[in-house]
Amino acid sequence: MLTKRVIVCLDVRNGKVTKGVKFKENVDLGDPVEMGRRYYEDGVDELVFYDIMASAEKRPIDIEMVKAVARKVFIPFSVGGGIRNLEDMRAVLLAGAEKVSLNSLAVQHPEIIGHGARAFGKQCIVLGMDVKKTGLPGLPSGYEVFVQGGRKAMGIDAVEWARKAASLGVGEICLNSIDADGTKDGYELHLTRLIAEAVDIPVIASGGAGKPSHLVDVFQKAKADAGLIASMVHYGTYSISAIKAEISAAGLPVRVAT
Image (tube, rainbow, N blue to C red; front, side, top):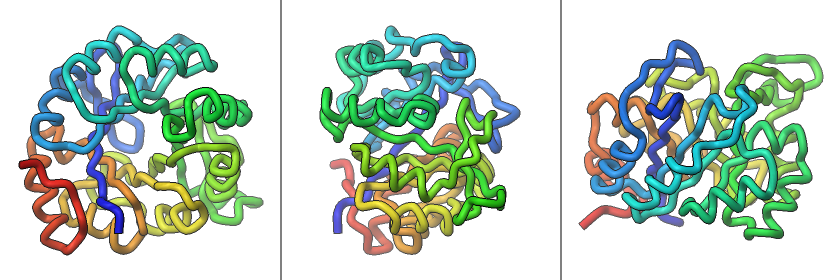
């Protein structure tokens, strides 16, 4: 079994890390660069930075923030939000990020996935999926894809989109459950397992983590390769090391900082 990854997500709005519930009622929490440095020092495996308003505001991502993060952390980190084309992807990678997360752009222009994979390698291309259970007629899974930070429904079935993106060259999928986001009640296990069983690339579960046992559940019951966390560390409830200790105690392989 491959080592399970613990990844911290930092949603950035107006230069600050922010956190909401079900993509609403966001509260600003602090500086993304310093928070990223702190999590790196505590032993997190990867970081994800989302400029959550860039696509909706039709502006490019904050490249200076990406450069500042790269100077402080020495683990893989990915960046998403406001990516409009190959040039934007190249700029993010040259600024120090290891991966680019595509969401709205990939849904609206799927061909960008293949272009990015060929230009930079599929290991650099992450598909961000914002998904909600809607039960809309015509959606076999019952789960619908949203874009623009969860603001716009697309009428696309989540499982079908995951399969298509994987065939186009995505290296991994970060699956964000809008229903579970910020609730701290646990990941959306049914949705996560549906996606994990539908594709042969790594799936990162996102949305709902409130305690270490939630990561154990999503690894054991939903076949996730990694768990994205935010609230449980942003508010100081748990440390990365404590989370990893519980994952390891459950018999799951995890990188423990020495």
